[in-house]
Image (tube, rainbow, N blue to C red; front, side, top):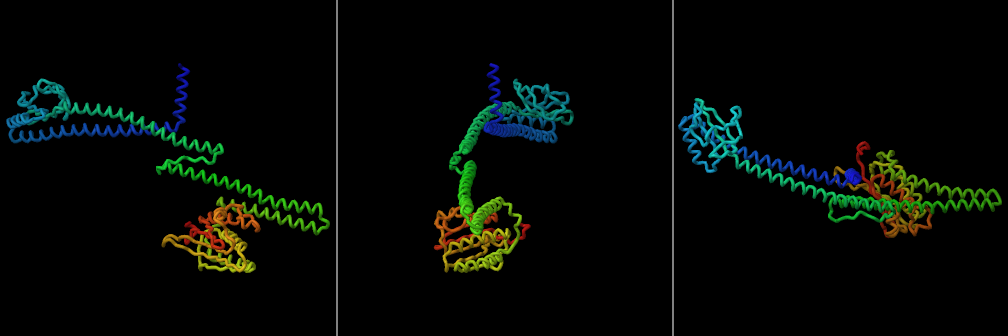
Length: 476
């Protein structure tokens, strides 16, 4: 038996300490009971206080009338008034007693003065003998001129009975409230356990490798659904990031293996078959070019990682983006002419902007490189920028748009274009690593903007939307 008791105590202690749902239910029940008891106590005291106040008010009115009668008519007038009041007492709860200087009873409905009367107290509640019955009454005594004494009171037996009935009702109500609180606490505990267990089952399945599990949503649109949707969105994002990491790892292995293998093959071929110094130097130079491609891919990945981590914000400053765009247009205008293309610009005089000028130059360079690379001769590339203010107080959105007339992309390629190492099928045979638009996406997101790729039929339209800035850096 002692062993069983120790076992139950140990398990109960464990549940009490470790069960969050049980603590939640207990707290709910305690708050419910405390609130109900406080409310019932307020009702009880309010009701009893109201009854007591009515009794005292009735006695005060009688006292005022009788003292006034005593002042004007004297003893006889007061005796007549007491007799009239007793005759008109329909409720049969009025108590009056008038005595003379020799303690002789002159008028009233009591056989004698109450034995427990305390002359030092104004209001007193004590038993009185009236009509042969001992009843509880609330009384007050006045000493009149000439050593006359006047006692006025009310029989409060009915009030006491009401008080007792109300007390019993309150006790039964408290018992029912306690039962309801325990039941409500159990229901709350059950609901809370269902929510926690649902989250626990989902996270346990995910830790075991099932990334497709999600927290069920009831569809009621309440706070629990909001929490479930938020967690599910977080899980979706984690899944996408993990898939992206896997894809990037595969892409890195594939894209780095080719130039490294090519450099190794060229060096190995030169070591085995080179007949003179010139052939050996040529093989080494070609291997260096392939290794430079590997270095460029690694630097691009490192730059994207730094930008996504936000470590490049230290270079943010106010600069005129319109001037930067014009400089980039002048730089690439000559490159476009070499490929038989025309670069057109539509830029405002000034575009104040808070950001990293060098990174925006890099982003625009990547976009213009792609536009020139994939556009056929005799085509046109347009670069435009403008500001779309929302109202007088908000600077609005700054939009940069580059449109070409090249090979374009299909819908599936447009959705995946900003991914690292992604290359559309039409661009497989052109040089590149598939990191250009990924770098642009990272730069735009670092500046709080969005990158949008759309069809130009033919060609591609690249749109960058970033928050415009008119204020000084210290206000941002």
